[in-house]
Image (tube, rainbow, N blue to C red; front, top):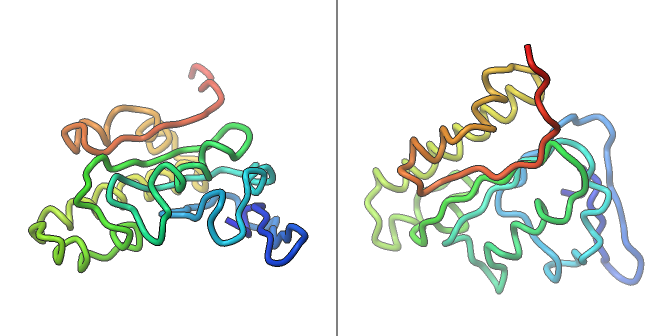
Amino acid sequence: MMLAGATRVYTTDPVSFADPRPKAFLAFSPQGPGSEGFTDTSFDGVARTLLVGTGDGDITDGDTPDTRRMAYDLSPGLNKFLVYIADARTRHTTFEHKTDACVRGGTDLATCQQFLGWLDAAALHFLDGALRRDRAARDWMMSPALSNLSGGVAFIEQRNPPTPAP
């Protein structure tokens, strides 16, 4: 998030490591305000294209899905997306593309892998739409495709400019 323009307080003053080169950012299970030096104004500088990912089971050290989604909620402007898995069987490590904690929690491997597949689909369509300017990928991100694919368990929220008519 810091490369995207988020600031963080290490001691007394906010610090930024914003890098102008990347055009789009993936932030799966990011810290939110109140976590590790991030504040309510930390995301004010995140103006570029962003996909945040979290879900019901994405809980660690007091960070909750509601806190994690704040990177999406508080970043200004358009071209912002949130992929959310509404299933408590997800784990923090699901958003690190790992199944181990999900399986240890009693969920079968196939279901844990399905969670990863939904995240993969969202990430690839996001990147193709943002970086390759692939219209079909962008349309997929703005459609109910992920919700339909997951039976309503996973979905994408978005803040986008209107798409011009062809």
